[in-house]
Length: 146
Image (cartoon, rainbow, N blue to C red; front, side, top):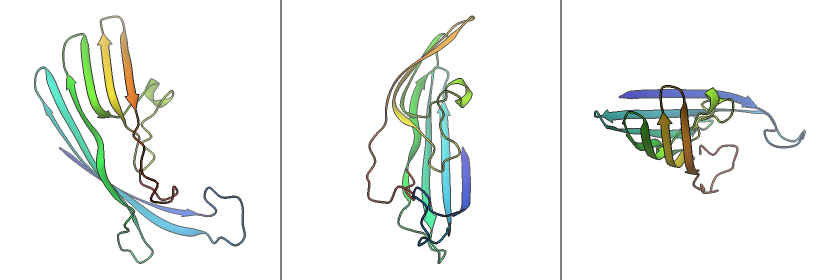
């Protein structure tokens, strides 16, 4: 079991917009809270990372922009040379150089799908069949936690 509290303060001006003198710089605070649990047996494991992200407004009240979802929720087999993981999972290729789980972003990056992991004494290969769900566009993209 693990709990992560991650507040982040940012000061920005004209974020995602062309330069404009009529827009004043602004300051805001976002916070990510993650609650992780893992249950493992000899031949399988289940991992669950529940996360909640919100934006604090200028009056230091919680905003309505926040969301609660699963960052990861998967089932994985644990056999000697072939393992299968299915569910919502993060993907990290070449230590994040080719594809990253975006740990710098408050929401991170995870995908639904199946991962087949084949390993032996001389090599290790992962095969992915992944997709990402389409999130609602109810909030502005600059503040959306997902």
